Length: 529
Image (cartoon, rainbow, N blue to C red):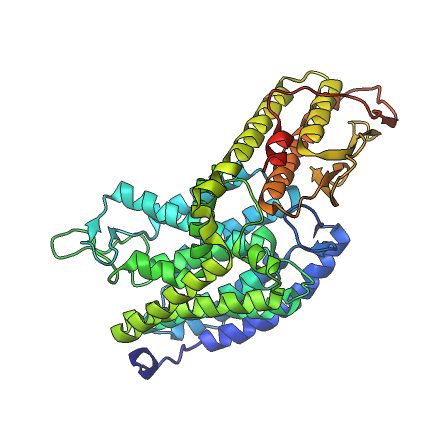
């Protein structure tokens, strides 16, 4: 194959790879110890498969290793020795990744609301596409290329980057999955960059690949440290920036054709970029389609992702990560073969990928979403649950006393199937106030699960016990996610109302009464399925 025949020595990329791997191994241990001492850990809860608390800060360790590697290589002059090396291009791709790492680290520690995370992601991607690199032509096989206006090009690139970043965030739900997939993707991107004569991207990709590989020692199943949003968002922006910048010139100088019109760095640039991303891009497509067909909010989490479904089929985390790496390698091989002129090999790999995806989607029951009878039974449940949650959230904003907030909490517990609830809040004088509530469980209640949410710090928290219907895992997880979101809002409202209060009610029990007669009945829809 042509791309194997061409010599690729990668220059100082090899040194960057080894150095970043060793540093990530050391920084991973340091950050793991630090996270345990500061109690920055990921605790078991809804949408989480671990049975114990696992330290965060893996993402911080990864980018510390990457940044240290690049700084050392720059100081000793390795970058100057690389012909064609462009420091502005490297910084243009590294800067949004560092900003996203900081955003994710804040979210890991303080649990930023999803709408704010999306907003900041959009701003980071918008800045990159406006001032650094962007897609100027939309070209897919079978259609003529469409030249994009500058404003449209910025929006398309921003949308692509945000989608890729959230794809990386979605797959970060199983041990070694995100790091393993990123390792393969970054290796492929580095190969493409080296073939295209962009040593800065090859070195950046190989250094990040080495950091991922080094951190995999701590993140392999069973994981001893998680990369968190700091790692997944940072890696997502780094990969997204690299695949957009491949084949382009200096940042801010967009490619123009003979007539002064924008042109592609290479044919089918958006398609090739999506193939290089692989599993994260597939995850985003499937998630949008699944939630859209079910009438669910795109921003509300669930347990229907690829790794969740594979785990339900009995796959172990190591097998899930290995399978994802294999699919990423196959997707990247299509792009690499196409760019090197081996179109026959590209078509053969694409045919293999199509067969694999068809069989895989059937194996994971994704085609069941296309059955109207299956969807018609579940859409009302999602709609009722969403409207009820919105109604409760509106009432929380109008609540003027903590007793009104607690009445809304009892309503939510009753409707969402929670039989026990405990809220612990500290006032401005650091005095603890505890509220408990429970009601008799149904005679034929199924297995129960306990969820927990914290805000601001570990002092203010709530926990509750819900029924867990294994027959309808998607519906059950939807209720658990909505309940968690509501309880976080309720805690925040309680803290606001109790700020400055001098008289704090001591620990008390709300009793086992309160019969509710609601117009919207979530449990009624669930029981009729």
